[in-house]
Amino acid sequence: MLICNAILCDAFGEKKCDVRIEDNIIQKIEDKIVANEGEKVIDANLRYLLPQIIDTNVSVNSHNLNGKNLEKLSRDAYYGGVKKVVLSPDTLPAINDEITLEFVQKHRYHDKGSIVESSICAINSEGALSNIAILLKDGAVAPFISTDIDTNLLCRISEYIKMYNKTLFCAAQDNALLSTGVMVESALANQMGLGGISPLSEITHVSKMIEIARFYGIKILFKSISTSRAIELIQSAKDEGVSVSCEVSIFHLTNSNLACKEFNTLAKIQPPLNTEDELTYMQKALCDGKIDILTSLHRPHTHVDKEVAFFDASYGSESIRDILPLYFTKLVKTGLISMSKLMELTLKNSAESIGEVDGKIEAGQKADLLLFDTKTSYKVNATLSLYNGEELFGVIENL
Image (cartoon, rainbow, N blue to C red; front, side):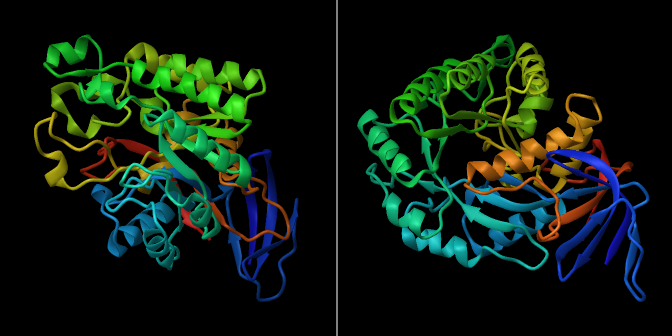
């Protein structure tokens, strides 16, 4: 197969070229390639030729871990331009033992679907350490913790991370503060009569985990950061040589807590959507290179979970089926970042967080590619998505 007149874009730049693919392997990338007799030719007509991306923070419908939900996640992700997802392990049941991990791995591959990998809960249901060494050996990509756990356990987990040279996935949160509210602490929460979640829930635990990373010399990825102070703390630590990185979701780069008005449960996200000032900061931090990884923070739920009072509604919204058009429309088309920078944040850096090298399109690689038409738009048709009804630019053709 020959793809001609494409704008090839990866994490290292973009250029107009032709690409030859045989047996799903990239054979040649040149300015102009002459088609062989009988060869299938696709005229990209100056559409982007992009690598499929990786999302390291997704979940299954209502957190219920079963074959049907894993297959749906895989297919929806593939439709959205994602080649690999990493399942957050706080499912039902939690992914914290060999049996549950093996179940996920049996549903790792689906025809016309993304690869489903899994992180693991470093703490089991009894509050003790999971068998981290065996679970990593069996193929888990990273241990995951909520940082509101016993400090002694944190230290023991850190020793495992150092021993196996993995990245520790951290949800920086204080459960005592989380339990007091359902949206960010703000004037709007007061007006709506809803309990607020203090930003200190995230900030104090980011600070603590930075010192853990510094002391043990380990890598930590802070999952779905939502406050400006946390990003500044992480950036300062990076400048000092501490191996910490910052992940932010598309929700926290495109919406503020104003989306919760009229008790819109689709805007009930964890961590909660922040104020307008914080949203502005997040977008500037993206432009300034202070954000390392982007995620869909895909947390799908049923109508039963969402069509209830705001206080009782489940946290999360679906997003992954539209994620590449969302990134392009909200972040690239608006001029916040370039398409190449998007590939760095959604492929190169996310791959590094799970111990892989990716982000460059070159001869000899698997052709995990897609054509992306940025001139065509469509309206999101997903009643359980915060973006339902919005116009997005970018139509995907997986190759």
